[in-house]
Structures are given as structure tokens and as C-alpha cells.
Length: 436
Ligand code: SF4
Image (cartoon, rainbow, N blue to C red; front, side, top):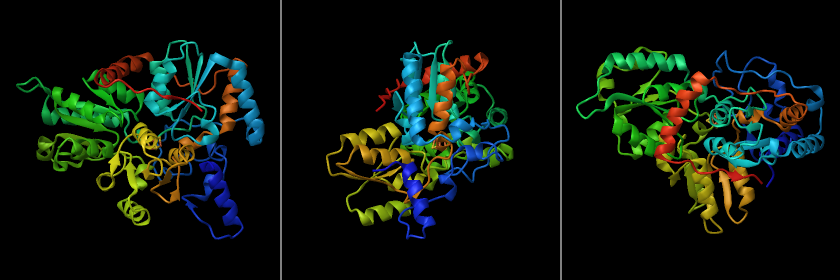
């Protein structure tokens, strides 16, 4: 099966010829090279997050040199391989599951964000860690890597619209209001009023916020164990930024949806009454992933109608009704393992980012694997990384220049590590795979 990238290009060619298209894309701009968007009005770029509001202070990528923008795919391939070969153990390249195949093929490790950050620690001799993922992932890698290692994000505009939905100022303001409602004194059993829990998909500043306030980080693999940990220490949880992961996880633990009010940072008390907050067990931040928000119960019904017996697996960042309607829900690691372990001939409808789904379909031709969403709509920000940026940062590093370094100040790293370590003490991280 061809890559998402080449599928998008093929669809565009067919549309230009006026041929009856098969699958469609969510934006005709997906076919444009990512540097088209680097110097325009700030935006996440084409793809699932293109309608999301981008903060004015989101990092921006300047124009990369013409020699990279004009290079053919073949030339970039030769240059990346040559630079990687010349650099040897001095560099390690990490590729997230959602990254385009044209970039992932150079990765030394492939996995989810936390697996990759941990994988980087297995290469202490590497002077540069090139993270082909998004900004918060590079921050986590920087916080877990050695002081002499530089973490490089090939395109600085590769942020995450969900992570951007919770910023340190809004969460601090929320916390102050919650302290006014609940006070700060523990109850008779020693549990404090609120424990902050941040999803890995958040800024380093928010991880530090949790570290400083008795809180913790979670991933989509360990969210239930982390919430259990939090409830042993607190009467309730403030969960950010992804409302869906928080709601789906807490609901599966038996917590009533009525006791999970949403916090809208633009409103006083998040848009809640003090009475509703008094009853709350999990306060959910008003954030979401635009990739996973696209999945629907109607898509699941359509998949079941077309493929009776299909196994529907969705990511827990999907809305609650989608998770409820699916056969299973789990992290990217869960999905990858479920596909690997299935008997040959299994049909899967998968609700997660298209690059990962299409890659699984290529890797496991013995199964029928397709994305629940028939419209091709990749993660906008992962899609901002293209082989041209990888060639640019690698060749620059070979010449002694560290470009696009993501360095988290130690005042943030120290408390953020506390929150990360609490998570690791609850559930050790699984390891990333060695790249193909
Ligand atoms: S898939 Fe969603 S959560 Fe992941 S990087 Fe993209 S926008 Fe962020």
C-alpha cells in the first residue's frame, strides 16, 4: 500500500484531471509542500487541526534554504542517508507513529511520544536527538536526555493543537479558583482537595505545574493507573488538556459522567456553579484532539455494515460515544500490538491518525485494515515535517550547527521530571521499536 503522502498526491492528480475520485482529502492544500505555510499567517496548516485557533505565541518556522525546498525526493533521500551515515552514533532519529512514511523510514526508533523520549535515553552517546514528532514530544525528550544532548525539532511549526488548548496562565487561573472553592486542607483521610493530572500531550510548563502541586503526568496507555494513584491522594482530579481521554478513562473506572464537569477557561469557575464543582470527581479541561474528534458512531455503523465481524479499535482521545460504540479502545501502542497479535485474515477498522493506520495496513497484508474516517485528513502538525527539513537539520549538524533546538529551562525541567517520575513509579513505560 502506498504512503498517505503519495495517496494525497494521487488524489490531487485525479481531481485535476477531472477523474471520478475514490477517497477524498479534507483539504486540497495537503498536496502543497509544508514550507508553503511557514512564512504565511500563523496556522497549524492543512489537515485535521486547520480550523483550530493557534495561539499567537506558537513557535514559527522560518523559510528553509532553497536548496532543500527545490530538491527532489531522490536527492533528499541521498542527502539524508549520507548525513546519517556520516554522523553515525552522534545522532539518533526518532519517528512518531503519526509521522509520514517519507520521514519515518529514517527513524532509529518508532513509537509513541513517551516511548520515543525514553528511547533517546538509550543512546547517551548521541549528541543530537532529532525528534520527528511535535513540540511537546521534543520538550519531553529534552527533559529526559543528558545535559550535553541537543534535541532538534526539524520544523518548529510542528506543535500540537490539543496541547496548545491548555496554557500555563489559564491552568494557574483555574487552580486559584478551585482553591477558593475547595480550600487547600486535606480531608480526614489525608487526601488533598484536588490533584492535577496532565496528559503527556501538554507543554513542559504544565508538567512542571503538576510536579509542584503533588500532581502527575499520564499517557493514553496508563491513564487509568494514574487516575487511581491520584484518587488515593486527592478527593478529585483536574485533568488537562484532553477532555476525551479524561472522560473515557474515568467513566471506565465507574465514575459517573455527571461528576465530570468541563472547565471552560474563558468563563468564571470554568462555566460551572460552586455546587456542581462540590460534586465533581474529575474536572475536565476544555481540550480535544482534532484528529480523533473526526471519528463518529456513524463511521462505526458503516464499517460494520460493510464488513460484518470487523474489529473496531479507537484511540481514547475519541469522543465518549465513539469509544462506547467501538469494540475496543486503546493507545497507539495498544492498537499496534492488537494488530500484530491478531490471527491472519482479521478485519480492523481503526480510529486513529491515518499515517499509522495506513502503515499498519502495509505491514500486515494478511489482515484487512482501514481507517474509520474515509476522508484522508492527517494530523496537521505532524505533517509539517517533511524530508527537506530533516535533510536541512542533519546536514547543518554535520557542519557543527545545531538548528531548531528545543531546550527546556532547568526551572521547568526539575519539577516536570518530578511529575514524570511519579508516573514511571506507577507504570513503567513500554519501549519503542527499533525503526525499520
Ligand atoms: S494527533 Fe492530535 S494530539 Fe497528536 S499531535 Fe496531532 S493534534 Fe496533537
